[in-house]
Amino acid sequence: MKSIGDKRDFIREGSRSTEACLVLEGVACRYKIVPGGRRQILSFHFSGDLPDLQGLHLGVMDHSMAALTPARLAFVPHEPLLAATQLSPSIAGAITRSLTIDGAIFREWITCIGRRTAIERIAHLLCECASRTEALGLTTIAKFILALTQAEIGDATGLSNVHVNRTLQDLRRRKLISNNNKALAILDWEGLQEVAEFDPTYLHLKPEAAQ
Amino acid sequence: MKSIGDKRDFIREGSRSTEACLVLEGVACRYKIVPGGRRQILSFHFSGDLPDLQGLHLGVMDHSMAALTPARLAFVPHEPLLAATQLSPSIAGAITRSLTIDGAIFREWITCIGRRTAIERIAHLLCECASRTEALGLTTIAKFILALTQAEIGDATGLSNVHVNRTLQDLRRRKLISNNNKALAILDWEGLQEVAEFDPTYLHLKPEAAQ
DNA sequence: CGCTCTCTTGATAGACTTCAATGTTAGTGG
DNA sequence: CCACTAACATTGAAGTCTATCAAGAGAGCG
Image (cartoon, rainbow over all chains, first blue to last red; front, side, top):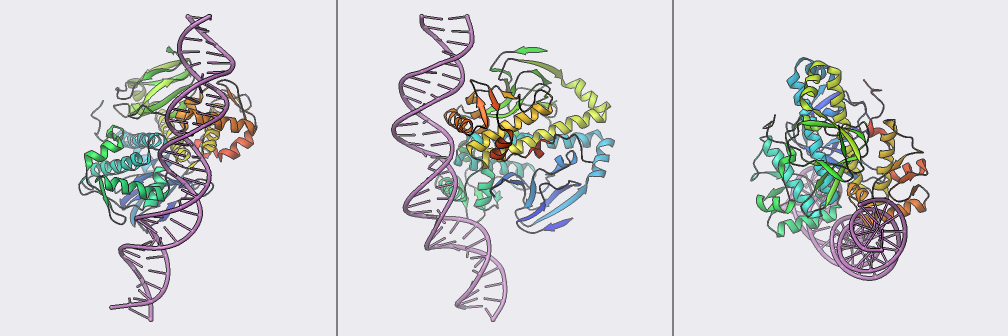
């Protein structure tokens, strides 16, 4: 178990991955830096997430990880985890399922950044984070608060911080969100989903209604 | 085994996934349509790829698949595939590894679309496709030809077809590529990588130099 | 030959970025 | 309690990249 301060890297791109991290508290993210210094955030992670299972099967990290709020993390060495997958098919299945949903969320982000406008992207990000934290049992839509800076939202959505600022103002003007100083909340869930064109299917939250 | 014409869907978003498809010949892609009709291509797939393993663990498809050139495909029902993973850990591992690399490529696409300029995005896409088809043993960098329309390249990179056209002209002017009528080839591999800021680490092509 | 699909080009508009300055808030230490 | 600092947020102005619209040119195909 490790406590980590605000804005602190805890895994670096290019390093060898030997343990998987579990988010116990706070918000973490995966990100890449492109030559030129611009950052792209790839995903956000909340209490209960296991964000770097891909390290189990890849030697070298292709991205970094950082805490965006003060956070507590647990690190599980790969070996016992791999041993557990050999013993229990259900653990192996859970890990594979988690990796698969990870991919589904990435696909939605590609679509969002590639084919949606600024306001749609930000609204969509909010809908996604609210749905996921609710599914994790951490909050409800009404009480949901996203504690990110506008620069971080920009790095996740492929926008500049200035444009994020103006777009958030637009969302406030439409009475869809409220936003006081690094605490973003949802005022009109239906309206926000509509703007975002949000369809939660890709999150695959229902545990195997299928099969 | 199925032969499929040009521009033909063979898996639809929202459908239930019951078999995995193997690309035997041609180029296939995964894509999503956002309300408004704009398309985002999520990945390209060449002979030897198994592009929808995620369907093994998810009930409902969150995207569609289509052939972009005339193609031959094989469809493997999920059941024997899942049975094989129970019997052989190495098959299970191969599938998980494939899913994991899938995710790594998505992460790079997010970064590309979110934080790179048009010319960098297109150059990067070319580098990626060339590297992957070479690794699959289908071609060499020198002989590599990408048979996509400019609209398709735009749908993959989040650009309009008009802007793709102008950007390809730019790449030709710089003598990095040649491009006659739906046949894009690489003239200067080093130069193209440089423009793309291409680092193939994320493709994880070396089979487990790690561990 | 006419049709369709793709590529190409020009003109115009819009979305978003960059730069730069100012305002706001919270924390720190005297 | 107040000055001082450091992060963030906000605003304006100017500029760039990319989209959209529209039209024409080739190429392949029945």
